[in-house]
Image (cartoon, rainbow, N blue to C red):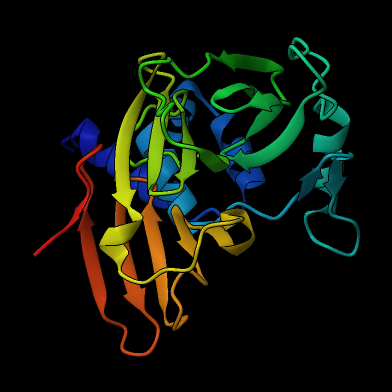
Length: 271
């Protein structure tokens, strides 16, 4: 009998593993032999598995710590195990210059922590409470800031991992709201630097309300950030795709979608 091609066998194994119903079953299969473990732990396979099997809800993270799911929720045993093993007091992260760490976002097993902030000067850290690893984010370089513009509001968040991104890498998005424009900065763990990724002039959007507290009208879902209540007619959404760092608008009434060209310091509407 002729032997099957090795790559065909591995393709079949992947298809079998993709049909395992829970991460726990997948973990048990990975202990069977080195070959199974190599296939299951590969980044491309894990991304495919997550698409078919969304991660279970384990709980919520707030300023008071981690609140695990409780019985009869099916994730209760796993949530309790995470609560016992992880450090959601962030005691392993060095203290910020002032105050204490406050969790402001969580994604892909990482928590974004905010310390003190004054204008463009801030303390940010990204950590993994389970492995107790952390990265202190460097402050914004002075040449990237817009000192002549009054800074009204900021919002910081973690960007979702892209399909081709390294599982160990991450990006932090820093949205700066000014009187005349919205500027999106991105810090990449791969480069260790900040850069201006997109900017948008408020005048390019037509008639919008004065900007006072954009954070109250902001929602972050599935890699997109949405803002409501900017227009006097209240019939549009401003949308930021955090994967491609692209701005667009969506009309509530008609569903009409308009892509916006994002050029740092040269924002304008696309044809």
